[in-house]
Amino acid sequence: MRIATWNVNSIKVRQPRFLPWLDQRQPDVVCLQELKVTTDWFWNFLGDELESRGYELAVNGEPQWNGVAILSKVGLESVAVGLPDQPGFPHVEARAISAVCGGIRVHSLYVPNGREPDSDHYNYKLEWLAKLRDDVQAGPGNALVCGDLNIAPTDADVFNPKAFIGQTHVTVPERNALRDLQALGLHDVVRDRWPNEKVFSYWDYRAGMFHKNLGMRIDLILASSPVAQRVQAAWIDREARKGTGPSDHAPVIVDLDTAPDGDIGPMVPPPSAPAARTSGVKLPQSK
Image (cartoon, rainbow, N blue to C red; front, side, top):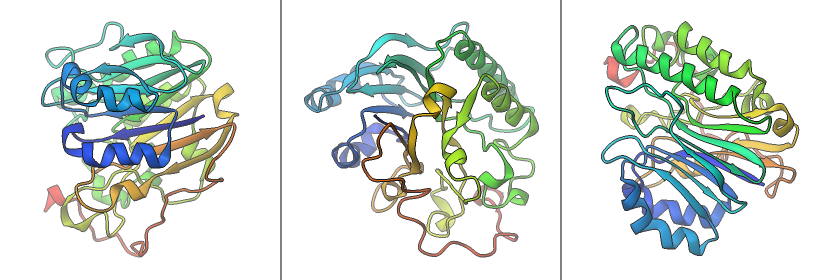
């Protein structure tokens, strides 16, 4: 079974690339984030195309911002929209959906960004993550937590730790919240597969960050132990970040039981010219 998660950064914009990507990669389960459309729009404009490919759909949409979905060829049962007692900012946002797919409770998540440390949105992010942990803890033993978690787990998951000082995504409270989630028995399958490799899933559009391979790994697939034991491949589909009109995120793909493309990775294809020096590079927004 192949599971993929992808922050598409507007399914309207990404639609011409998304359907060919589905046909190429043939995932059995797809978790999508940042749809930026209503549930009705998603069904009206993509429902027939996806159902003709054998997918069942669960969508939690929202106009302009947020929005998550799960597509499944292996069943879609016990759909849960949002999180129990989910906090809002100020209203409850479309950031979570889960369903049982092929015997696994799959969560598609778009964690709040946090904006600035110690801001109201940052505190909202931490509250949201605490509710996510409660939800996963209450769920079954076979689980996959997938999506844009907006946290780089360690300094190894950003191109230059010094460039991120004073920024969200790398602060101690955020990383502690992620560790609390993983303490439920969840394994970071890409990092487990590639413990010593530089692996990114997000590159800012600005300043040629993608071509310089100056990125972050904030899109994760976390698997409970019974599911993690089935992993045969775990990789970043970097090809989907290339070319015209890409999302600023690349899909993360995990193969269970069999690996149709072999044990490839960590990024496919690998960067052609990885940056040798990043100590003097700053984030685009800090210039």
